[in-house]
Amino acid sequence: MKEIILPAVERYHTGRPDLLAFRVVNPNQQIAIAQLVRYQEIERKRKSNFYHVRIKPPFRPRSTGKNSQCNRFNGGIQLICKDRGLDFDDLKMYIKRRALKRGYPFLRDENGNIVYSLLDGEPLPLPERYASVEDAILLNEELDQVAAEMGVILWDEKLY
Image 1 (cartoon, rainbow, N blue to C red):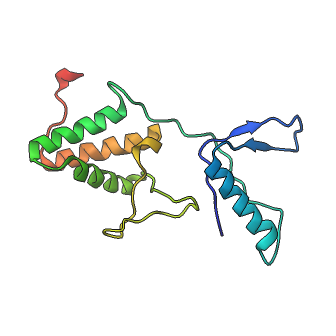
Image 2 (image 1 turned 135 degrees about the horizontal axis):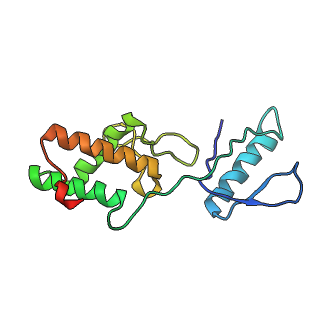
Image 3 (image 1 turned 30 degrees about the vertical axis):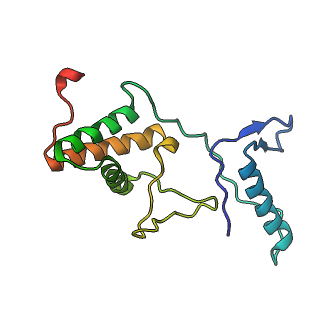
C-alpha cells in the first residue's frame, strides 16, 4: 500500500460542506498523487474510489537566527567539538540519531517509508530544515544529555 504525505497544502474552498478539496502546487507531489490515484482506481485488482485521509494542521517550523533553537543546537555542538576535538558533522548526526529514541522523526521517502543509511543500515533522522518547534526541542534535550555525559558545560549562566 502506498501512502503520500503532503506536509502543507492549501485548502481550496468549494462552497459546499460535503466537498473538501486541496490545491497541490509542488510538481513532485502532483506526480505522486496521480500515481496513487492511477493505482487505486485503475490498476488495482479491486478498484476503489475510497481513500483513507488524515488531516491535521501543518507543523510549526523551528525558530532560526540569533537566540533560536537551531542556533542553540548548532552552537552547542560547536562547543562540544571544540572541547573534545570531535568532528562537527559526526557529532551532529550522533545526537540526531540518539534523539530518535526521544521521538525525533525519521527521514521518510516519498512513499512514507523510513530511509536507512547505506553505510550502516541505521534509520536516518529528519533533516533540521523540516523539523518543527517540538522536534527542535527534542534535539536540544539530547544535546544537553550528550554534553552532560561528556562533562562539557555548554552554557555559562551569564550568557542568558
